[in-house]
Amino acid sequence: MTLQERDTKHLWHPLTQHKTHPKSIGIVKAKDCLLFDEDGNEYIDGIASWYTAMYGHCNPYITERVQFQMNQLDQVVFSGFTHKPAIELSEKLIQILPANQQKIFFSDNGSTSVEVGIKMALQYHFNQGEKRQVLLALEDGFHGDTFGAMSVSGLSVYNGPFEDFFIEVKRIPVPTKDNIDIVLNQMQEIHAKNKIAGFVYEPLVQGAAAMKMYSAEQLDKILMFCQDKNIITIADEVMTGFGKTGKYFASDYLNNQPDIICLSKALTAGLLPMAITSCSQKIYDAFYSSDLKKGFFHGHTYSANPLACTAAIAGIELLKSESIQIRIQEIIIAHKAFGNHIESHAKVKSVRQTGVIFALDLAIETSRYGNTRDKLFQFYMDRGVFLRPLGNTVYILAPYTITNSQLEKMYEVIEESLMIV
Image (cartoon, rainbow, N blue to C red; front, side):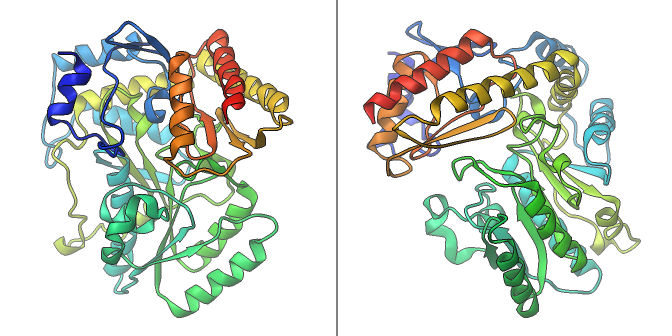
């Protein structure tokens, strides 16, 4: 039996309706920007396997470091113990995070990093004798699949069956230069009627909302309001972090820095699961007490796994390297050129870009996981390109190590696909 045939016996895949999509492609190998299936076909990984493998798959600089660590210390409880990889990672990460970030807390994935951030914000106020039970979030945001993260997410396509069980959340529109005054007035009204604990947001790019982009200038005004009202600001940089916006973090474009930052995905360069929630000294100090009950009682079995920490250290070193920084700028230039070329096409409604994130909206209406999306996906795969359209949006978020010829092939295949919609 093939991998595809064996898969159907027991496996339940994420974001999949198995009755309409019963088959999964068996991948047997990955290298640099290519995926190889069991039939010998190869595919350019145009989304870095959900924005994780930003330095290419099976990068030897990372894998050799992890292999060495595997023979030294593989796993140890992180409550009451510590180890060099975690300490070294904290030092390297604090060096590149926004200057107000001082402490890091480990968990397992993007959803849990947001869950931790939400709990920190709620308990921050609780520890100071104030109950604030309402959260603020942007419309169309997506922050993960655990309950706190779902609560602040605004995409009912993912969360509909669970909405009756959520934390109370008030939503505001994504701020633009045209609506910012209205949004600020709306925030003032919400604040007057509710005790707002925290504001959770994806800075500059809302990934699951089909790469919806907005400006740092308007977000800064929102953050200034929150900071004036002691509303804890929580930046979900799970997708945007580690160079994707052209700077180390999307928050680097802002004058007002968040109290809390959520990190995962490219944190470990796609090699191992891990997440980090960083915070300012102000947040940490609210938990620092001789009163045990004021401590932060949240933990994961694999918190700060030494192998994942080692992968993250190597990833940060690659991110800071001259070659990767140059390549990021080259990809940005290539995306801009393609955007200028394709935006006047009759089948293209609009194009947009932030850093190495490129998105194109088709001039058609289609459901998020409808037939048109499936048709486009198969069109790309048949031509050796792995892209996952979101409704009428086609986007690219490829590894930094992608070659010029691979980029050109993706652009050509996307342009060719416009003939079938």
